[in-house]
Length: 338
Image 1 (cartoon, helix red, strand yellow):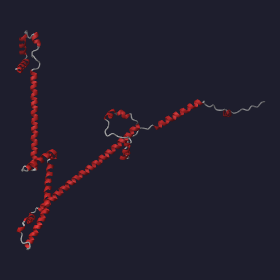
Image 2 (cartoon, one colour; image 1 turned 90 degrees about the horizontal axis):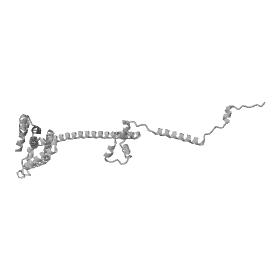
Image 3 (cartoon, rainbow, N blue to C red; image 1 turned 60 degrees about the horizontal axis):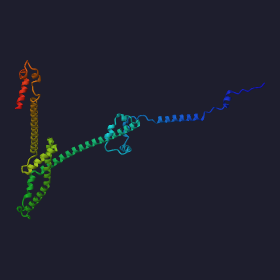
Image 4 (cartoon, rainbow, N blue to C red; image 1 turned 30 degrees about the horizontal axis):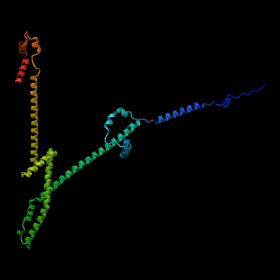
């Protein structure tokens, strides 16, 4: 009896060689795997739409950084192309890649932020200048008042009486070697020195007072802020001064204002007269046109078909009697032909 040894199925399967795919099938599988990997990489590279830039992100962009980013675009024209801008519309912008739209959003936001900062600086600077201007105006008024007060002191009657010693001629002075003569010459020298000291102060105070009065006058008469009006006032004052009949600022202002008002009224009167003349001509043309319009006021059918049993001129007469408007029109035509 032959003993048979049974081999387990697992061992048989392990010993049995696996069936390998054909070379062509393997290459196809590799190509499919590579295609899937390429698709996965492309999907991973797709960027999501850029969110709108936040204020913090925009504030991080310095002007130098923004300038460098703009330089990277290449040479930027001084003026935009109108022809190019006319071809753009909302759809053209919407069709841009999301990454490009996100970049533009951030750059525009950064530029807006920069403009706002410049506007704030400019506004602050203007406020500082206005404040400084008001301070200078107040200082100018203080200087004018101080000069006026000093001039009032120097114009004191007692002080002016003392200055008269400077006008005493040399021949009227006492013996220079006498005590009285020495005192007279001392007073004369002091008076002359004080007069020289007073002269520029008086002149400056006078100019300051004139300027102050002028500024007050301009503040109360806004027309003086108009360059043309102010020039007319100045020229009129200079003309009167050259002719020997000086004119005060107030009088010159009133005269120029009156002359302008008269000139404006004359222009308006001339315009009104021209309008009335044109209107009269238009009415005349309309009257003549209406009087000559339409030809014979009696319809043709009156003479052709008859009117109230009559024909010819008799029919015309009957028709004109029954139609006063036609009769009036006929009379107007006859008058215009005369």
